[in-house]
Length: 130
Image (cartoon, rainbow, N blue to C red; front, side, top):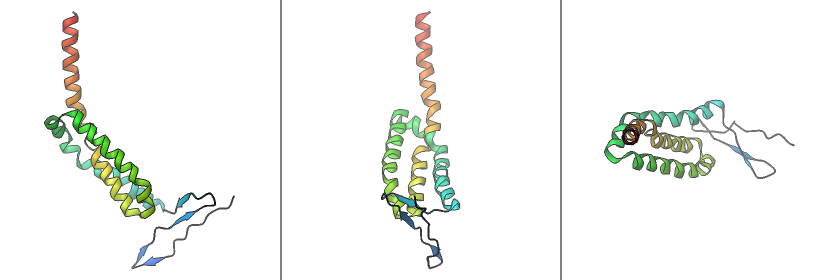
């Protein structure tokens, strides 16, 4: 099997091109440096941190089911776009990852209101049994 080489010497206005290589089977091999991979991984958490503060209040105002359901739906739709955006460029993919983090940021703050309602209903159920 031949080893594919990534070319990193193209400059336009002092910025690297993000190049990809297509192997013999037609698969795209991305030539991203470790720093660029780190930006993509970090992009999710940059967005995730932002909505941590308001996630709980959104759940209390609109309901946990609606907030978690819409969050899951938005993340799923954005995930469908990732293959297209990753072929387009690093920063478009980074933006999608930040948006995924924003949508997922409400997940953990939504849990306390949901657990509170669950515990109250379970407590009432156990009181009726006794």
